[in-house]
Amino acid sequence: MTTIKGVEERLLCCLNDRLLVNEPMARHTSWRIGGPAEYFVEPQNTEELKKCILLAKELQIPLTIVGNGTNLLVKDTGIPGLVIKIGRGFSDININGGVITAGAGALLPAVARAAMDHHLSGFSWSAGIPGTIGGAVIMNAGANGSCISEVIQTVDVINRDGELLELGHEQLCFDYRISALQDSELIVVDAKFLCSPGDHNEIKKEMNKYIAKRKEMQPQGYPNAGSVFKNPPGDSAGRLLDVSGCKGLKVGNAQVSTVHANWIINLGGATADDVLTLICQVKEIVKDKTGVALQLEVRVLG
Image (cartoon, rainbow, N blue to C red; front, side, top):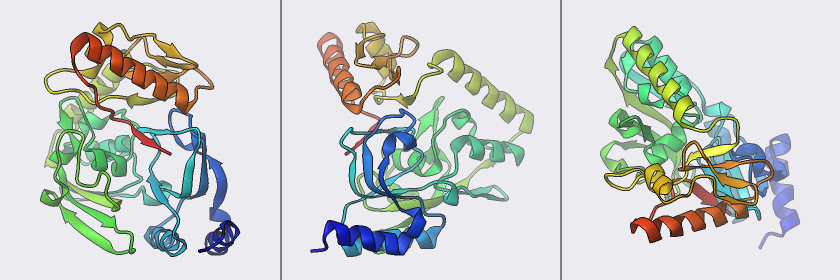
C-alpha cells in the first residue's frame, strides 16, 4: 500500500506544477460551494488525461471527473483522491459540412454560436446555458423543447485503462436527462453532432429569444447551479415547488429563488450542508402537498 506521502510525491513527480493539493472546489463550481479536492489537475490534452487516469489506477486512489461545475454540488468535506477537470484543453470546435466536432470542455453557447455562424441548426436551444459539451452529453442536457441527444452522432471516451473508444448513438441509451455514461467509468473527450442546414438570421433570432427568456425567467446575480430537480413527466419541477410554497425558503445562506422555484441560489457564504438541507426540505414539502417525489438533476460529489 502506497503511503499518503508516497502518493503525493508520485503525483508531483509526474504532474509537476499542474497538480494542486487541497484545492477548494468552490473555485470550480458555479454555486461557489465545495470543500477541497485532495488532489486536483486540469490536463491540457488527451495524452495528459490518459496519464492522469493511469496514475490514479497505479496509485489505487479514487478518481473523479468534473467539467466547469455548472450542475454540481461538492460537499463541504471535499473529494478524496484525484479530481480531473476537463476544461480549456478540450474546448476545440471543428466544423466539416454539417458535422460539428466539439471537445468535452467546449461551452454550449460557443458551440451554438459556431453552428449559427456556419448556418447549422440543432443547437439554438442551448443559447445562454453555461454548461460544457461533456456534461451535456452525459446528462442529455436540454431546454426549450430540445435536447442534445437529437443531434449526437458519436462520442469519443476514454476508459480507466486509458483506451480511447468511440460510442455510437444507440450505445448511449439516451432518455430524459439520462445516458449510459452516467455512473459509468467512461470519460468524455469529444463528440460529433450531425446538424441540418438552417437560415443564419432565423437561427440568430431564435437564440436571442431563448437568451432573453432565460434572463427574464431565471435568477441573475447570485451563484447557482441552474435547475436543481428534473421535471417529472407532464409537469415542471418549478411549478410544483412554486404551488407548494417553496419560493424564498432559506437554510443558512442558501435560498430557493423568488424568481424561479427550481433554482437554489447562494446568497453569499452558503455551505453544501445548507443546500442539501434545503433540498431535503423542499422535496418533503412537494411530496406532502402534491404527492410527487422530485428527482435531483444536480450531481452531488463528496
